[in-house]
Length: 114
Image (cartoon, rainbow, N blue to C red; front, side):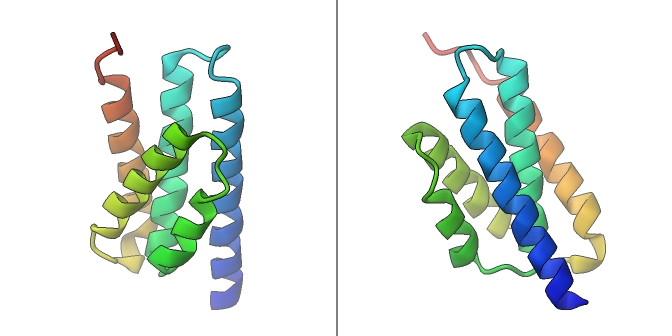
């Protein structure tokens, strides 16, 4: 059962980062709200992996495949911040949902680049 949960979390993380890659490629056609929503979902998947006890190294390896350097750097920051948070598997889904909301809110309220 634990192997199934780990495999599922790895799959979700991979799908989320793949979605982030698509968002980066299509960033010209997306508005800021959509990009922030994608980042929020990615953050949730990263936190799920953290709460399923994936190693920091294994999650960071997935970020290497991101073609956009800006997105890759942002993803690494999200991963590091997630791994600075406590490991509480009994509250994994709540923690992941809270982290999604936090990252998405921070993205939505960031100043526009000049």
